[in-house]
Length: 338
Image (tube, rainbow, N blue to C red):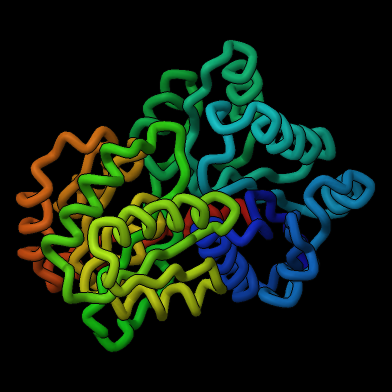
């Protein structure tokens, strides 16, 4: 049986990364692949996905797993960037380097490459990716960067498009998904809260965490702003749960205003009238492709106009957009079978 190791930001209860992992595991199981996941919480990953898992930073288990495997999958997500953390970038590069040293096949799976702000990190990533068997990226900026380095790559859509989403019963609620980020600011939060109170004062406001360690404190702060504006407004903070539970709850919303890329994507896949908050170029690109309204991080938008645009979206058109996206496994399976 072919063996594969999956390396990514797994086991940290992050909705997007766990969704990507579930898609990859389901596909590999169909191909009868023996799977080991490098996870921040191995017991959680083993129980949830029915696969073998080892602690991501337990190198006494990580190195033997790489030595025994046939293929390393690195990704998806934005692993190879040094803006969030140089330390995490070097970890993921070390995993790739070790697999190459052991002469294993290496597949870069639907990653966003960069930003890479240091010369040495650019050198390391370029050096490693040139030696991988197959590289797939999820956006044109990453593809253009790699092509400028002379690296062959394929641009693919996000793997989460492979998940079948059934929209739950529309409960008429308004979903808000926010995450902590260096450019988040009081002006944006206040203007957003003010418009919510104006437009949706008669609706329940559900505040979604997609990763508790990053999202919860900001959501509590935002709830406080809403309550200060309208003390009797109906709000509920919903902590991050399993992929299925989160999707079921999000897809019962009538409207969704979201920061995280995969929160926006979840809304679109359910045909929910969605507005995105532009904290990252990947969110901007998704909003542009799907033709949904976009709020800037400095909050200089006309929020009345933005909310009207969101209300006037066609759920049918959003679903048609999603149906144009299909993840292509052809070249990945060629590498597996080669």
